[in-house]
Length: 239
Image (cartoon, rainbow, N blue to C red; front, side, top):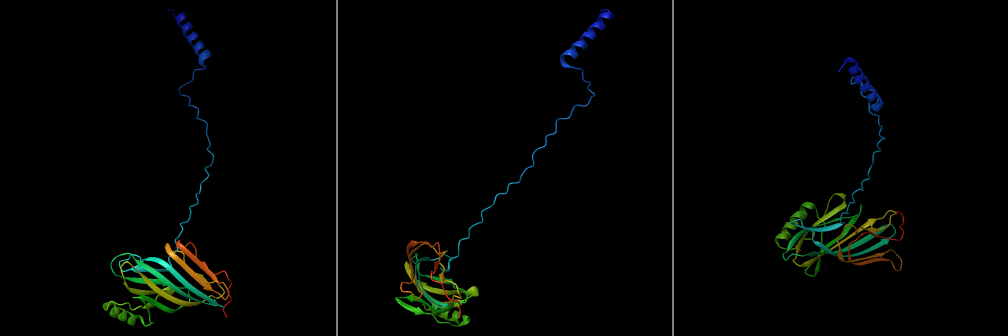
């Protein structure tokens, strides 16, 4: 090919490239940067956690020496309100589902400032009343009665107005009937008997006398308490 023909071919090639795909780019020219995309700000999401619902602690229990709780089957309560004072008597029935005789510990938390006036246990159809003695003497008396296979019915006071008592014997396949009475000063508050936290019971009977003709009652069967017993009548301030 002559020189003139080569120059004409190269010129035609350049013209064709310019008309088809644009100008020839120099490889040394830096590539254009991609467009900058700004993401919208992220709004933090806060999920409110539901606080755990605490189950109310039972106001009284009877726990066997092996740590298992005896079943509360019945509550029979009588209360009287006179001015700023209230008197309560509780009859509690616990069932021993096992065949063997067991020993247990009864625990009850009374209102602040309440004073115990009676504590007793039914034994062989008769009510055995407790005596208030010093703690050291109570232990000696209990050990003595325990060796004789009898129930000494001793009540001890702990911190926070909690009272405990050793309970023996709790016969197999039988109920243990406990009685406790106490008085308290209401100081302008309505009378209340705590029930929430107790298990499902066969029967609950509560009678409150407040000077009215009818008074106030609560009677439930096969019921797990979801509320406390609260007097509807207003109280008077402490004198």
